[in-house]
Length: 448
Image 1 (spheres, rainbow, N blue to C red):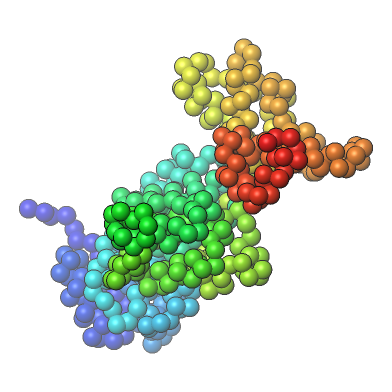
Image 2: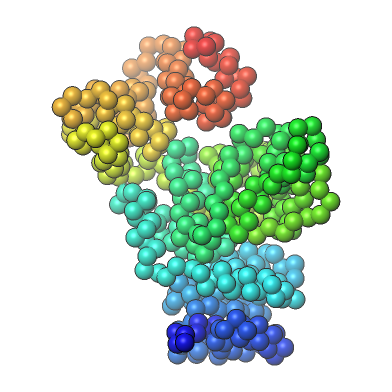
């Protein structure tokens, strides 16, 4: 006999028929419900009882659902709140998500959607294990990293779309994975896709799937990325690289929560949380009319910025120790250590490639060093990015600007090629160059 206490749900709505519908539906899910007709009654119940979920209407006789969300954020930040809004009130729903709501429902309430939302909210991890898991994966004790962890902790408990901004190599995909893994969709797929790596003529098929015979080469039915991510999270990396024609189709899929495969007649309902990232300035892309404004507002409900390594130089030593432990485990050799001058050199380097570049530098130095001690010269850092105090290199020491710029260009291209294992297409994408421009530069610099 199961004697465990039933989970408690707070329902806040001034319409008796809505309250009754929610009470009956949740009761059938073996949940205990408490009802309030207004903001005051809800706040009184919150003071007396511990709840596992709150469902609130937006419009209340003595206030708004947003006020209740803010009240709960201050007093019980780990209590998920779902907002019930009038049909089509997208702006209201987005404001609720920004305020900290878990998700939203539209009236008239669809019972399958209600049950799905409630089940998802009740699968949220308890507060205790969140920060520890994030700290294990996201290294560094600097203030920017502490702030990033807090934001991941909060966003993992929401279903809001998140736009993750940051430089190449700063760890945007890791942040996206942590948001997924610490949330209620953790047991479902996390599907990452590099939008810049898919040929434009295959994009629709890749995203939405295709039916057998829909085009030359379609020898069987194939599900798309949206179908693969059903129930979980779809991470759109380098989303700014999507062509405008695909942006329109992506916007519709997000709005309708349904996709139609190439050659298909019926739409398939999909339940995915969208996370996206790019190293480009997405707002500037909108201003330049290279990215649709309506899609931007859909994706950028909440922006999460990942700091560059230059902004958290104090974390470099901890990151280096982590890399050395991994290398020692992989090679079976004793752990290497950084000479103090090598550590100082790393802290004075600009790291245009961020954490990814740091790992590459340390792995290379690990193979060159003697006696397991990495000296400054073992790092082979690009002089153009070395500074004395975190500032740009001293331009007064440059005799020939053309030669200097060419040397910097050569180093950056070589670095991109090394980091992509000499995949020219991937290196061009990392440097925001067209393949044709990349080929020209390689020939000009004698690297072809």
